[in-house]
Image 1 (cartoon, rainbow, N blue to C red):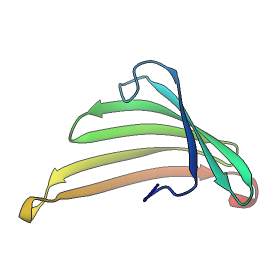
Image 2 (tube, rainbow, N blue to C red):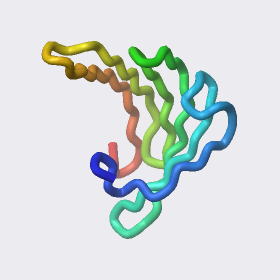
Image 3 (cartoon, one colour):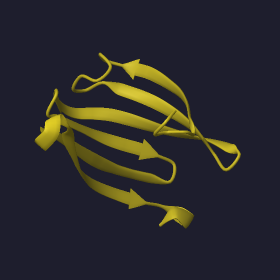
Length: 90
């Protein structure tokens, strides 16, 4: 809730959640209506990388997340996204 305030539901569809090939459905409440996004895990080499394909009515794309140790004991999160929007969102 702290970083995805509109997230309402997470539903595993197939595979082991978080593992390569797993499919999960996320439901968000945006502007008074439900928005459903499907995630397919393309790669997961925890704790350093998580890559996913995202699909929703308004967009499709991939997000490649990489995590590296940072000075002082923190973590640096680097995310490369390739998103294609449709309709009014474009």
